[in-house]
Length: 348
Image 1 (cartoon, rainbow, N blue to C red):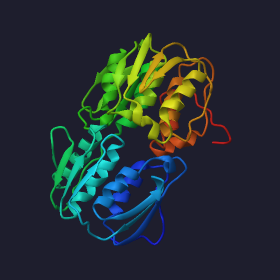
Image 2 (cartoon, one colour):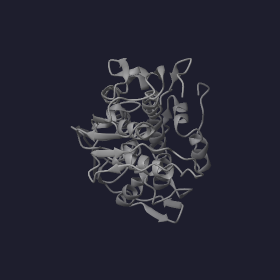
Image 3 (cartoon, one colour):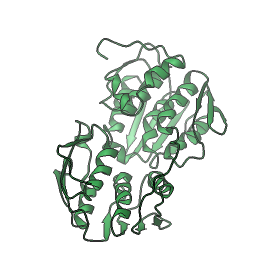
């Protein structure tokens, strides 16, 4: 690998920024990684500190992008410590580059959150011929020097995106989603249990999920291992009978937006009663009223409120609706396919 001739623009993708930052540490020469407005507010310092422990020169703007990395084509130290409670992407980034050097031991100084994402990283590495030894509590990892080998594989359907379509079916009608593996290691398969707990009528086949409009009841759910499900789960709870408790929300303030604040602002605007105590959001379900929703350029906020708009009184307007293209470019077309009445303004 060689240093790029220009800056690496990561858009609004935290995964791209963090994984590529680690990869740049193996490149001889300097690399500069930049991003869009919201990515420039997402933390990267814990990963940079881990790379410095390996002898890599790197810097950021107060712990946030842009990031500059001067790799050496090798790393000096073979053991590194890093926090596990800020972003699992930091751990995955180190795991991905570890076999390309002389091996590495990674120790977490705090318990790992979003464990399923790190497990998915290790599963993918295994598919490409690399083995990672992890402790039972996933706070220590040993990776020996290995080579990735090319394989032919089929990429699974994305549960994070599908969760919104399944939620639409639970609120407004019958929906079938195909190419979903219920036994996947993806963290957001948790939507299955969340929907069941809410009382949603559901049929699960080998790679096909069917949900039907159902009367929803309140839930008490911990989202610390599947934080991307928070927005759509909050929308579902806004219509559920009773008071729901959504827990494990601390790290959601460091996503594309402060997702807790963004969801609270939108739900309150729609007339939903709620209360936040530390990292627990309590939502009293009812009949939301259609409103104009600010997405904060966050794809998951846009999708979650569009789902809630299906059953709200009156019209719901989603601002900056094209932000869904980050993860689900056909979202609005698919919503129309399942029967949603969508009109695009001239600004979109």
